[in-house]
Amino acid sequence: MCAQESICDDWFLPPTIMPIHYSNWLDQHNSAMISPHTVGMASAASAFTIFGLYPLYFKQLNHIPPLQVALHRVVWSFVVLVPLFLWQSNLKHFTTTAFTRNTLGHHALSAAFLAGTWVLYVFGVSGGYLVEISLGFFVNPVLSVVLAVVVLKEPLRQAQWVAVGVAMSGVLVVAIAIGSFPSLGLGIGTCLALYGLMKKTSPIGSVDGIVLEIGVLVVPSVVGLVAFELQGTGAFLHTPEYAADDWLLIGSGVATVVPLLLFASAAQKISFTLLGLLQYIGPMLTFALGVFVYHEAFSTAKLAGFAFVWIALAVFAVESLVTSRNERRKASIVTLATSEEIHSTTTAEVFVVDWSQGPTTPVDASFKVILVDKEDDRNIGSYVTRNSPSYYYSINRLKIAIY
Image 1 (cartoon, rainbow, N blue to C red):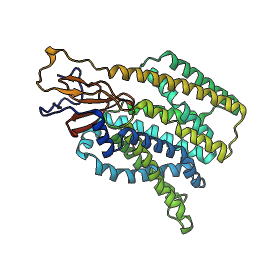
Image 2 (image 1 turned 135 degrees about the vertical axis):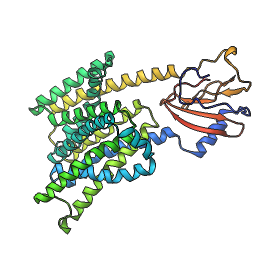
Image 3 (image 1 turned 180 degrees about the horizontal axis):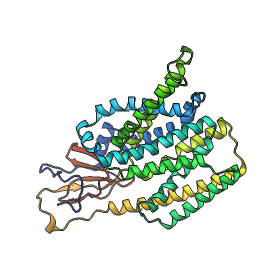
Image 4 (image 1 turned 90 degrees about the vertical axis):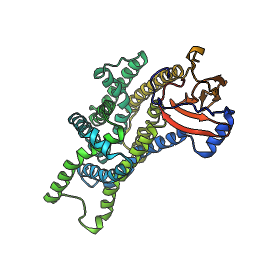
């Protein structure tokens, strides 16, 4: 009987199981595949790098009205994403869970926040506000925490309150430095935070949600593009000399979907704490492009405001990392069952493994063989035989290791 509820209720220890030394199993495992954690890290870093370098792409479309660029981005994202989704997903399950009144309403609102982010982003790139765009992405985690307090009634720890206060002070300093409220940056940050809140409370999976949201947006986007064409102000398929623009508009769908898929893959393989730290790759690259490539105005006073925001993010990140590790350490403590609780006659070695540091001392007991990755909250379960794992599973966010 499992000590707590988990997703592996159907696992049973085979009676023929034989213990082996951990290093033999690890050698065989490493030779067969790359660690999921490594794949997740690479996927996340790639996704956020693409996000951060988006301005290089959309700057090539500066001569096209930003709203049209955003509408094309929706349409071509839909064209790219839907075939991949149909190939990989259970369509019957999707239609059953997604097409309900509550789910459609939820993701229609979520789609509105996503559209707001995309439109503001393209306007910002076109207008030369990359530094302000990066500010929006930097303050997004802090705004998300504030929303969690206000809407979800989640309590803030002391260090988080400090981070919120310092970040808001930084925004105020930036506002004073530029002589106006950074509405574009905070608009992007707020839309992202609201979008994240909707995703957190979504009744369906993240990938299904993205498909549904873009599906909600595609019809009004097509209508808008047709209206531009009828007015004679459209920017698509007009003259051969603008063929490059057509391909860039079509390619915006690929440029949008690829990092989304990489992000979705990474979210399944690494902890959300690590994912949250890696997300700063994006705004740092956008900030660097604005200051060093496109030479946007960046005064000492504005730098001071950004420094406040960066300090707040550092406090927030360190506090989250420490808290997350403490929680994982508690979750990965193994409590051996008493003799009265052991009903199986099969005995096998149980390894509780920190992937980065090697195994703990093996214990003879009647337990399922579970390998717990305490570093990134990813748990790996395996039955171990003399020569190789007879079964191997990669289980995300499994909390209980002992049966």
